[in-house]
Image (cartoon, rainbow over all chains, first blue to last red; front, side, top):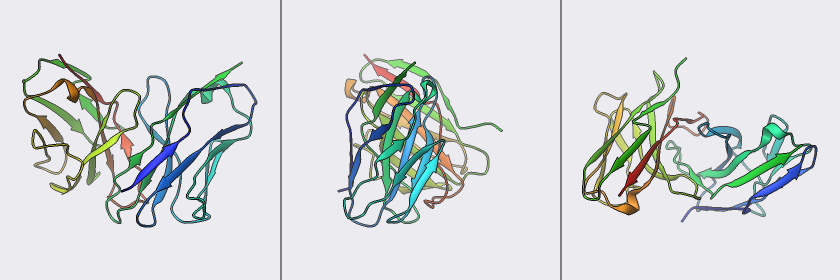
Length: 113
Length: 115
């Protein structure tokens, strides 16, 4: 079945450090891949997505590239800020016309000044 | 405009009782999803509505769980004979259609505690 495995946290970084959160997936078809973010006290919101192999999703300085050969969708940011502190979820959808999302367990990121 | 809203925000119930959780999607969104998020886990898909019909209910854990969306807008998730293991945050999301190109917008969730 479909599944997502993401790097366990928590992750603590200093401001301006480089961030990588690893995500790998298992899917029977050709899934679309997503990163969702949950800021403290807020609901889940879409951060970025990629719908086919080699696509790069980007938003707010975050990037992730859909790598079919390694079944990965790692999240990166070159210089994190305190405001990036949140829980990050990797997710996939592989049902055409029915965007049911399968989520990873989440990675909590804390950025310290 | 208004986002997805869910009521109540918190619900405490005793084991064996019946509960209803409500979701008000964004106006005009035809697709509606329910997820369940247990502590320390990612959201787990429960059911997907396209309009009034349940297009995919493969995530419902057993027949104690049921959901309706009679007019294609508001949805209610119903749990019978609640068990302590049902304690979780129940999330609702809506999108313009069910296609992957349309973003899902999540509500704040209902935290259910079964004592």
